[in-house]
Structures are given as C-alpha cells and as structure tokens.
Image (tube, rainbow, N blue to C red; front, top):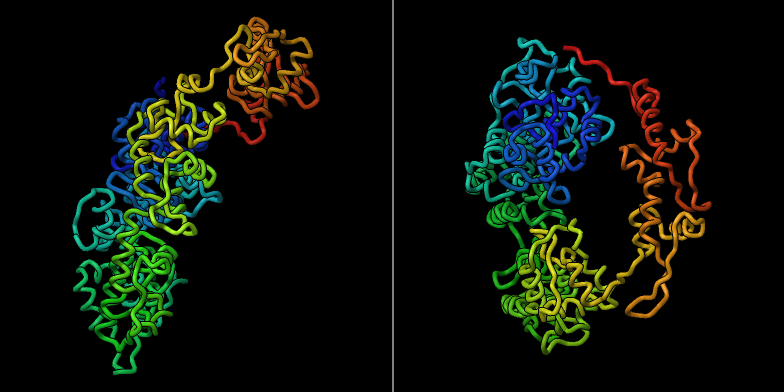
Length: 627
C-alpha cells in the first residue's frame, strides 16, 4: 500500500480516531469520514478498532502498527469496549464527548498546522476531569448533531476553537481526585493499586462511587438521578474516597454515618437513601452482587429483620434456605429448571415445618445439592441452542441426526438432553482448522446443506465420523455459525456441473447482475447460448459461451460495476450519463442497464470537473489550509 505524502507521528496514548482526524486535517480533508473514503478505509471500522483497518492505516501513515493497535479502543460487544488491559463498559469511556486540555492543545508538537487536537485515552475516561500532566480542568466541547461526528476530534476542536483559547492565567489548577488517578492507572497503565476494587469491573467502581457519594454529600433524601454534572463529579470523588478503603472501611462509614438515632423504629431504606433504591432494583447486574453483600450484612447486623423478609432484593432466611432466584444465578440454571427438578421428584420437597415459606420461593440445601448434581449432566434446549449458536430448526435437525440424545430417566415433557453430547460437539468445533471467512474455498455450513440436499444434522454427523472435512472461519468462535466446508468437500457430497459453457448464475455473479438480466441478454443476442446436457442428471441446460461473455465484458459494464471501477456512486454515474447524453444498453424494463466502456473516461472527466467547481451535491470545494 502506498504511503501518504503528508503524515503525522502517533502520540503516546492517542486514540485511533484522534490520529485519523489529525491525518485528515493534515491532508486538507474537511472531515475524517471523507479522508477515509478517499484513501479506501472504512471509517466505522476504524472507530470500532478493527485490527485489519488499523493495520492498513499504519501502513499508509508509516507509523508503528503494534503501537497503533495497542492504543486503540475496540468494540467487543453490545455496550462493551476493550483497551489494552481489559474490557470496560461504554459508561466508563465516553468516546462521543470531546474533552481536551487547553494547554495540551496549544502546545501540540505539530508545528506545520495552526491547530492540532490530540485526544489521549486519559481524556475519554468518564471520571477523569483533570489533565494528568498540567493539572488543569479539561474543557468539555459541545457534541455534534450526529453521534458519529463526535469521533472527528480535530474537526470538533476547530469548530469550537474559542473555547480552547483560554489564557493560562484564567485556568485554575487543581489536584486530580483519587478516582481519576485510580482509573488512569487501571485502564491506561494496567497497574493494580487496590485488590478490593480491582476485583470489580471499572463501571461498577464508578457507579458505586457515584451513589455512595450522593448519600455522603446530599444526605439520605438525595435522589438517585437528575443531578447536574458538577454534583455527580463531586459525589463520585467523595464516594471513591470511602470505597477505596475496602469492605471494612465501607462498613465503618455505614455504621458511623448512616444509622439514624430513632432506636427500634429506624428503617434501613430511609437511612441508606439512594443506595437502597440502587441495590433493590431487580435489574441489578451480578457484577454488583459483592457490593450488595456488604450492604446486606450491614443491614442484618444493625436493623430488626424478620425471617423471610427481602433485603436489597434478596430474601433473608435461615442458613438452610436459599432464595430461588439468587441460587439460579449462582448455579447457572433457570428458576423453571429448579421447579421441574423438584416437581419431578429428583429433589426432595420442602419439609412440613417450612411449608409456610413456600410463597417466598426458597430452596433447601438438599434441594440445591440435587439441582447441582442433575444440572451437571443435563442441558435445556434453550441453553443448548445458545451454546451451539443455532436456531430451533437446526437444533431439531441435530436431534434427529442423533448427535444430542435425551437425558436418561427424564420425563418426556421436560425435554432434557445430555450435556456431554453438546460438549462433544463444541470440542469437535474447537478442533477444526482455522480458515479465513473470505477465502474463496470456504462454503458456509447452511449453504453446503442446501447444495447437497442434506440437513445440517446429517453434515455434522458426517463430520463427527470424519467423512467430510470442515473448518472454522473465526479464531475465537466455537459455535456453529463459524463452521465452513471446503469446496472440495462439497463437491464430494454434491458433484457440481463442469461443462464447456458457464451457468447463468455464474455469469450473473461475474457481471454483477441478476439471473433474469442474463436471460434477457441471451434473448437480445448480446450473449451466445449453448445447449448442454448435465453429466449427472442428464437434464438439458442452456449455458453461456465463454467467448461471447468475454466479448461482452470488453464492450460493456453494468452501472453498479462501473461505480466500483471508478470509485463513484451509482447515482453520480447515472446523472453524468444523462447530462452527457450517453446511451445505455437496457436489458428490459426491469433489468440492469449497461454502459459502453469507451464512455467511462468522459464520465470521469465530467465528475472531476464538477467536483473541482463545487457543483456536486453533498460536496464542497476543498478550502485552503492556512499555515
């Protein structure tokens, strides 16, 4: 790949979007999106941290590939981001909010441009409000209208340059809060500074510090939401000072600060205030359970709690009883599975002395042991489909092929299956060789089943017997969606047609049109037909002569393919042809239209002239760069 003539060095800890934004400004592009479009990069893939796109960016900019990839922020799931040292929530990294230090922006090392805004990883961490180098508050720039435009850091900074041109005397210096130092050390440097907090996800630490700080700063009557940003920042810093001491320090703060002086009439919900509202919600993620356990133990120790009552969403019972929902989460099963085990007689029922607690949805220790013993060898259909990554119909095909057998001695109405059979399939998937999903010889499993007139279950059974060769198209994917077959393996189970001519489907793929358009071209005489007989079935086939296809390709090109060749959209080519009066070759009223290749230079010249003059819709003439 050719290197850019105007490049910039990658700053330490600089994000990939900031680097692309600076390269765009350096090369005179109005936005990072236009720059990526001009050099052949996918802007959204760069934002998501795709390793392939970042490697191409490093090649064309001449920077270190490993450094660029290690400093990038990657999207690894829904609302999940990943840095060099682990995964975090998008609530911790605010990528759509540009925050810059005025001194860092003014003292940028790039002297060839009047302004260069460098966004480092420290600036997008939500709890960080101060520049770690100059100890000055970060300036929060207004958001763009569209969220994707907020990743173009240099464009946003140039638009609001007046907000960053603050005299140094007007910038109040301040010491970074403890939570800022901790978040930078954990996310940017990957250092472990607190065993108690390092065991919790970063977004849990940030949210817990915020809620505890609201209780500490505003009292028990504070609301859980609706506060200004400055109030939340002050509360987050105060809450982290309490939380960083560990569970013992948190308990001491609760006992010395939060307990009211109302004697036996005191209520923990009123004393904890926003903390109680936060931890009582049924949608609380399991990552918060270690913190909830500390607060629950404090409540049981300091307040009058009756047996069977719910505390912070959990039922407080005798040591031999467990809440069903909590046990289901810890055991990795559903509550309906627990009820089925008990109702089917695989686990003992509640003793008569505890029948009055039946409505509280509790399980005994004996029932819990029986559920764990059965769940080790049993798997439910929905869990099996999630592990295999298949649909309900595909799973039925697997059951029909005998790859997953019903669990022994299980009632028919429960639909329990053997977990060992599912694990055997997953282990076999893990042993498959890795191939590229874009490889020309890789055929998806569903397409191979359709071509061979077999079910997916039959193909997997052939794989387990080593009768057909398969592979995986993803390194970190062990589910069925990543299983592919080689074309050689497909040809063995489904011999394909090989004759003198080309099938109409192959011609349609070569020309980039539909099969119906190829049929119209045959009727118009643009392509020469050839009648052949299939060697396997004996059916008569109407194919296309290869020489006529080569001659047609040398003269004509479909409008969609013409856009790919000259890197222009379909609408621009069609408009240019209409302005110049260039005729089309039409394959019917609903068929594709073709251009003569000799007319392409005229279209390119017309589009280039209109772009220079600024007449193209949606584009502006490139403005000169000062300096």
